[in-house]
Length: 222
Image 1: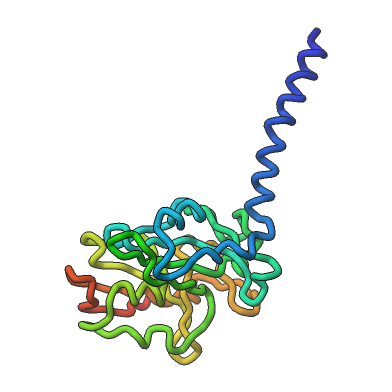
Image 2: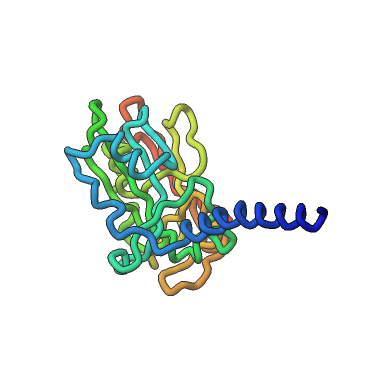
């Protein structure tokens, strides 16, 4: 009787574990080359985007701007495909993603008052760019422009989203690069692991009630 009972329990454990293992394999799998093909400015509704992509990683301007964390390798999307990252998935070596080189993008979607998509961008992380911050202009740059260029701000916002922050690495001479807000171990374009020594700045942006940039600073950090 005891042996039969143990056997039944063992079978039940197998049935419970298999779906969990399958789920993990799906999260780190090859992805979907057509994941973002439904996106069309002027046509796609917010409800359609959420039905396709699930819960956003962030929302801004009373939910007119939504963001998603997207994985995939540049130049290989058609072969390997994109896949979504959970809001709290660590993109370092301890998460579902194989490496930082797989955690590449932040998808930014901007909707109008009727919840129809007006603009979108796929912001790449970890790629050096000497002109990354050149568009910033106090008194002129809109929040929407900032997010289309830089993606979702890192960490929390302050004063009702009037103050936002971005994690910036690199320097003006060699090029700046963006860091994902949940990055574990970021890597450069050659695949070498970057350390916190490489994360050299906190970009601070202060907007007015009309979501126009009023002041900004690039604060050196260690």
